[in-house]
Image 1 (cartoon, rainbow, N blue to C red):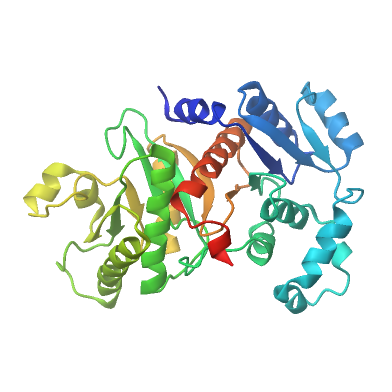
Image 2: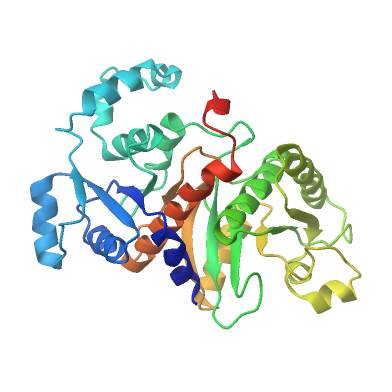
Amino acid sequence: MKFIESVYEKLRRHPKRIVFPEGDDPRVLRAAQTFYENQLGIPVLLGDRAVIERVATVEKVDLDHVAIVNPETSSDLPVFCERLEKLDRYKKFGVRDSRALMVNRNYFAAMMLQYGLVDGLVGGVNSYGGSLLRPLLQIVKRFPHADVIASAMIVALPNSTHGDDGVLFFSDTGVVPEPTMQQLGSIAVQTGLLARQVFGHKPRVALLSFSTKGSAKTPATEKVAGATVLARELATRLGFEMAVDGELQADTALVAEIAETKQVGGLVAGKANVLVFPDLNSGNIAVKLVQYLGGARVYGQILLGLTRPAAELSRGTHPDEIAAVAALVGLQAIEYRKLYPTEESLG
């Protein structure tokens, strides 16, 4: 069974509500149709109903099983404005009119997500970088153990045995340009948890470098080695079972024969299914290379560290990819209560 088909099969047992801020984008409408036709849950489209219906007619999309919410006329708008004004962060926004902010679909969607009106959020298909992430950071709580909000891409390689039948998790690929040692350790644990949510078994997390186990000594390699120690400590403290190793070169992390040649043992070397890159440059470049040179299907960015599942897509994302990411976010929503602290413990 193909990777995304297996995700669909799991989500059909526990369908979820996913909000799409760009509800009038033709690609989003087609993705919403795929989502409900596959019995994955209810798509919630934000925008003007008349505009959405007009686009749906052009795209030949049936809206019978789709919820449409216009932030400007929603009965939730006054409540959301009141909740926004109570946030300490709101006082730092420099915005005097909470309504002017809350009618922004990205802010409205983030508020829906935080307060449980939907189970997940997928957006960014016609937004510039940060326009979706900013409201999520301002409104949705982060986990106490998350030192930084980061992102991951899920990479499905054709005809490959690397990772889990060709599926690997790359991070950070979209948010943190130069993570500190502590942030890198946190990113490693968060990405491992995402892999656990998707596959349900123990992640094998490799923190990557141009050096393997001290073969080169530079501040950069020592940061990765230190982050490995911190990631293990964090995973143990939180009671999350995952194998973590570093610093490892990419071939050592992925190819058992090379790991054996370099005399690197353990549960990760040669068998990694999570690859943590030392900085955003290397992570983002790696994703593009495997996508366009290796023919991989990539899904994301899945955001890490928030108490609610969300994804920020690129502006070039296709409808089938939007639907697939929505399914992945829905799958996260199923598992959050099992893997993360309870809502009450988050304060």
